[in-house]
Amino acid sequence: MRITVFGTDERFIYAAGALSGYGYGAERYAPGDPLAPVLLLPVPASRDGITVAGFPDVTLGDLLVGKPRLILGGNLSGEFTAAARRGGIAVRDYMNAEEFVLKNACLTSQAALGVLLSESPAAPRENPTAIVGFGRIGKFLCRELLSLGCPVTVFARNPRDRTMARLVGARACDTATLGEAGTLADFRTVVNTVPARLIPRSGATLPPGSLLLELASGEDNLPIPDPGSGVTFRRANGLPGRVFPESAGLALGETALALIREVRPDKNEG
Image (cartoon, rainbow, N blue to C red; front, side, top):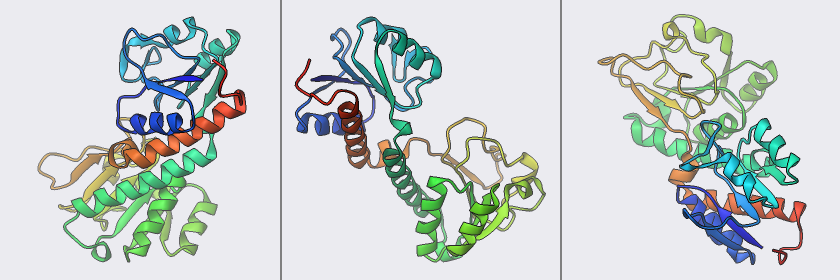
């Protein structure tokens, strides 16, 4: 079965290679090429709700015209999914595949650790770090930092998450305290993993030499430091594909393989 692979970063080269290794004819999309029976879209599949991410000349509607058998993508909208299914096209969102999400979170945390180590002038033991959110990425990153002796404080809304953070050796506070002046004043690094603004400008007072690291999607989750404040802001979305493209691509290819077999196990058809 042939697969058209959309994607502008290097991980999709590895994803296509992995699928080809399993016996599928996986080829990256090029303008003018006919679309295959299976389409593998990026994460997210679209940023504007109209075109395929990274392919401004390809609309989501264009994908449905050729009546593919299966569309795989990340963060697919309900509207697009419903339209595809009305046309008899099977759709699977690999961001709903827990194994893939866990692998992606682990890779994100390891890549983020590299950013933290390269950006900070202090060793981990002298670099008090706040992690906002204790989801998959927050949990993995907390573990990595604690293993290096870094003093970690987790800010989480859920009491269960705060308890878990304390049990693994971190301090923990309610995210509600992030709005209080001075809450972050003692941290050298603040890492946001929540796609929401939880830190108001009044609560973002950090000492010079500090780092604000954004790992979540969205543009306005963290207040941008004032020029001359000495605080560095780094937006680090999509780290796995940029830092570990081979590992990220293999994880994506393996997930795509499982979803293809779930929907249409006969790989020789088409």
